[in-house]
Amino acid sequence: MPDPATAPVTEAGVTEVDAPEPGLTAEEIIARAQALVPRIREQQDEAERLGHHTGGLDREFIAAGFYRMLQPRRFGGYGFDMKTFWKTMLAVSSGDPGTGWGLTLGTHHALVVGAYFPLDGQREIFGPAGEFRCPARAAPQGTAQPADGGYVVTGTWDYASGIAHATHFMGNALVPPGDSSDQPLNIVVVIPRDQLTVLDDWGDGVTLGMNSSGSNGVRVDGVFVPERCTSVSTWTRRTEPAPGMVWHGNPLYCGRIYAVYHVGLVIPMIGAARAALEEYEQIIRTKKTIFGPQVPRYTNPDFQRAYGHALALTDSAEAIVLQLGEQYMELAQRWADGGEPFTREMDVRMYAMTQQAGQLAVTAVTELFAASSSSAAKRGQRMQRYYRDVSMYHGHISAQYLSTAGELARVHFGLPDALF
Image 1 (cartoon, rainbow, N blue to C red):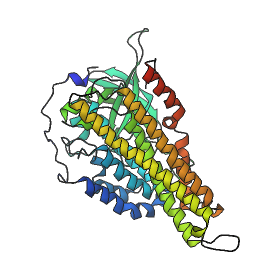
Image 2 (cartoon, rainbow, N blue to C red):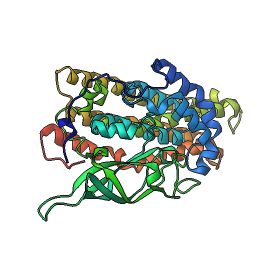
Image 3 (tube, rainbow, N blue to C red):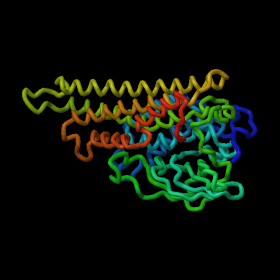
Image 4 (cartoon, one colour):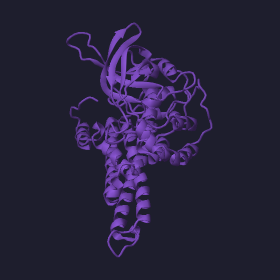
């Protein structure tokens, strides 16, 4: 497969597809997300039952421009920086963590398409109207048989978070080796939504939490994918910038995606912590202590400590993530300007920091749940939902911070490291 970096470079800054609102600012799109929080909370129960946020709410997300935030301006996007994207997704996630999970993971894969896929493939993927909403699954759960001009892809991928409202799906697939001495080639394929089957395996209590994230499995049966809509899965190991940084004239597309991918999982955890803080405050302001003298709970030191500690944990988690957003853009800009390379070690360090932010946010929700009394554990209570949602994060392969700690040390000392 040819490397897209060898493709002809076209003029950076060219616009082929106009964004719906070319003058949309970072402040405006963040404010739109904050204004939608009440609407997002209203649909929490229905979204859990459906397995994804409602169609009406998704139309509001589209109109607000959320799905285009990381999409290249050339193809109808806004190309906002990471900090702006994460602030917007934090607001959505504070309305409902599962909805925030599905939206974030259905949105941020525009970043890797803009960074790594060939320009003619990007033109086809983003389409003439720039409509692109795409979950991804990194596990190579499909096969890709070489065919004239591309591959015939078959496979079943689980956890395609955001697929309910998607236009495309991105999945990793293995190309069989040429002979017995070769290893299979791991490629990433982008497939239009109408060429796959979404499995009925999510929502309505199928899992402990994140029922509203739209994380259904998908099945693909012998679909032809043009080579231009594929990329070799070596994204976290490259030593040079991704070609998209030059093509789009934007360091956002430098290709260092290890940390920013995981932030997409941590943002909903911080959103859950913000939501849990609001819920807990409502509880302790409206309920009294059980034993006498009965006083409003918020005046009792035990409840004060729980709130104050959870607030500090949540503020710390958010500060880590937003600082990483600034750091990512600074490192990418310096790399684009010909300065110090944005190294893999830097990327892994940022990933490890992101995991710590996730642990802080989960701890905040866990402590608030424990301090809310057993009435908050009933089905239908928001605190119970937030607790269930953050519990799902613990088991995610990307949240295993001790594994990443070892990886970081190996990268630092120049020792062999497993490929991902």
